[in-house]
Length: 245
Image 1 (cartoon, rainbow, N blue to C red):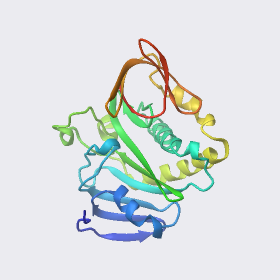
Image 2: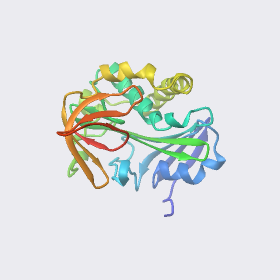
Image 3: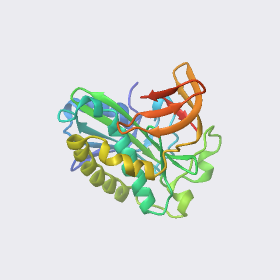
Image 4: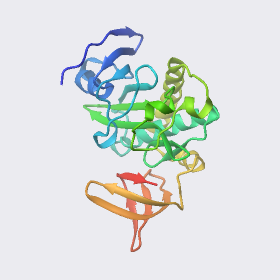
């Protein structure tokens, strides 16, 4: 699908689009010409998508929607997927520092009082990983009218309008540090922080992966980032899926 009309300018390693179909799609189509750690942002996405192709509601100019391309050559393959978990932990800690009680719902959704405030997706592109992030920053309650899922924003939670550029720069700085730790030491250094933020251990949940549905209880997040999930008949280690709490 052709990108809509957009204005693009390059400032340092950040490409800022006024409008595009999605930053994730833009990154997929252009990654071969971009340097590592290039960031693509958009004020408005005509076809923003989250995991499993779900539409991502992002009113123009209010939210932070971006992709960043990461070098995967120094990363062990088993840590490709945990890059999104590291991104989620980074953002959840950022929000907590701003007085927003954020929790990471396995594997990488960020919730506030069970309402989604941030979603993250990833894709392997050659020897790089593209991480896509959507943070509800200045969205108002009226912007979520008709949405079939609970959602919130930094503005709703604090009553304050936030500077998206400052938030982006803060994330990039902290995530770069955390990504370097992941490359060197794996996911283990982050596990305890994740558990302290609340991995919903002990909560009843439903796990959906394709046509498979499991009902059970969240036991724990394992040291490798997988989910320990107890059903009526078994204790399972889960590597991927949608967790409904």
